[in-house]
Amino acid sequence: MTSPPDHSYPPLFRQIQPNPIRRSSEDEIGVHIPVIDLESLDDDALAAACRDWGLIRLENHGIPSDLSMKLENETARLLSLSFEEKESRFHGSPVSYFWGTPAMRSLRSVNWVEGLHIPMDQLRSDVDSSFSALRSLGAEYGEHMARIARKIFDAVARDLKLDSSQLWSYLDESHGILRVYRYPLCPDVANYFGMDAHTDSSVWSILNQDSVGGLQILHGNQWLHVPPVPGSIVVNVGDMLQVHPLLFCMLLMCIKAIYICILLLILKLSVRSFANEAARLVYGMI
Image (cartoon, rainbow, N blue to C red; front, top):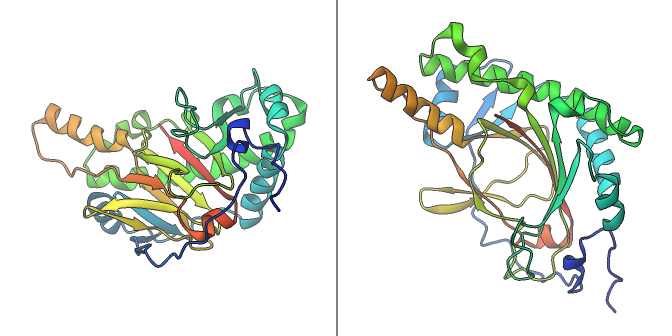
């Protein structure tokens, strides 16, 4: 007996009834990415991780666990509304709702994802009172993200020997973006991804994973599974940080440390990902 369709899902996702294929996760090659302690930040270790891996696992980051839980619960509540209500309520709002892959919404090409896009500078402006909880939680969470982004950026700036008097002009915390992703139950493990292989266009992307997992990275010409670790967050280098040192290199005619931009894939092939909905909070600093 099949389950009735979940009307919070986009209509395209309901065309095939969820029927998760039980698949072994033995083919997932796990990896231990570099771990950085934010409280006792080691500039050299951070720079080496950016050059060699393009991402780090950050511990002792100072984000209250109850804040993350409240934000996750509130966004889960909003995303559990019917698809039609989400389309209506978020229309014209600073908080926008998205799903699938823009311009590619055929059943065979769509990314199996939906979420909320929250520009931090607009979140602080007046929004619908029905989003007051999201506004206050998002603003508080954004302050922690800005703090973390600034601290690790200042550390890599020292490694790149950037002009310390210009650091504030290189990174603008007010342009941060919070995205909440929900990866619904998927009916076909062989043909769909939560998100296709991609790099992020930001300076940093800061990921707060749930317990389901599904994040993979391309390292050494091999896709590797990055399992979630409770209490930690994952930070990956974006396109802008990869490109900027090269521009400085050309302008100053000297050699700078070039950081790699990691290729990411949200893989929905494991039994964990298909037996459960997955979610993650992602903060991008541009």
